[in-house]
Image (cartoon, rainbow, N blue to C red; front, side, top):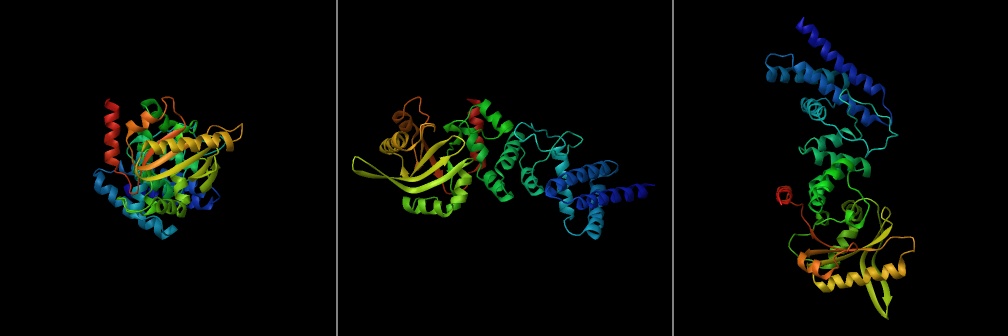
Length: 348
């Protein structure tokens, strides 16, 4: 009797994947995600019938792997089946609001009421994230921005969530987990630090500002990923003339969501008050001479290797919402250090 039940269990999962393959369409990845979730459910339920769960679980996974591989081919290794089991265990207890996703998408719903919007490879990355709020943020942003698995892994590796959370209060951090990253005002596009690990430059400053700029331009697509949503590239070393003097803005972008120009100035050393004054002049020029009447005020961001917050605060007006100074680093940040900073911030 027990053997018959087990045979029936194996056959049910084989049929599950055979049906999924028959229904291949443009939504193939999402279809397979639901199939993997259901397979994970069936595996867990079968394991719960075993008296010695650990050994019984290993046995049925190995046997199931062999049978699926014989019938359907590659993709059903023992390790992959363990991932499906983990997928169910994680997401059967995980609910996410749907307000951040388009309501027009008619997606299936699991018995627990969960919808899946991404491919299996995305969820393999997401399952590594134990913090639920952080995991929700990356799921929303990956869908909203169309991140590939590699881009999702890069954003997680660069601690995007922690970097955004450090500049927000508790209510705004919770909003990240519910809505993703809002783009409603200039502060929403600002990060501190900016992570430029894709340049391949050393952490110690042994390069010039021109070399840093060249590396950014060589990796413009990756820099746009670091900047976030809505950015389009306008130009580098964009020249304007004022009072018979020529000035050049290192990098000029336009943000379609904020409907404003965003100017970047690169400094490889310590930020000085003169640098802030220079950016203020750039922003004033664009506001008065370049932007259209129906566009929003220009934003200026100075990216530097070292800055003192006191100098920035003293140089800029209290109600400043146009000029920002941020540090950059050319290696991935330590998640542990950033999380410690977040914990300290919560205690304050």
